[in-house]
Image (tube, rainbow, N blue to C red; front, side, top):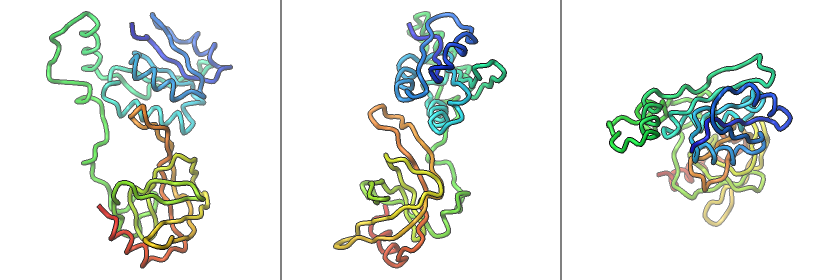
Length: 243
């Protein structure tokens, strides 16, 4: 039987938080150092209630977990609350979908004919590839035309590989398994035919992500601003590797 609730909090705050959860059924508990294990349990159990302790919810990993739950239509019946262990703060950050909740209830009573054509995906708000984007993003790294590049193009940041998503003569969007922080100065290396372009840059923005595929590790998505790159060489590189 699926768990009724799942709690994520620091070990020393867990007992106080559990006392404030009023629910019938099994309650799963995970330390704030185990977001990947917690996500795996959420995907498998699909608990009705997911509680994040307030201090954990304010961290990049907590925010990434909330966004991951929001974007998954299969978790449309789950409610996500942020609560303090002292009981002086509680906030519903993800509201369960009415249709998704009804679908889960129908499944629980053994209804085998419940395909009404409407799913949690119809109700759960989610970003799509078709969502229009402004030409200039608020991070300020798109002062030049940005080109999406082919799969497999990598850049090195301080010697660590990062996958390039899109690229311009003044910056790039990358995905990195290594921690990246805003305002971090980086040494950049970009392979180009028989030589490697080397220049300096800085991380303009960064966010921690939990990919939907359980086989993929956590990652950082970041915008890199170039400071002393050869714009002509970068323009030629963009033309060669753009989609």
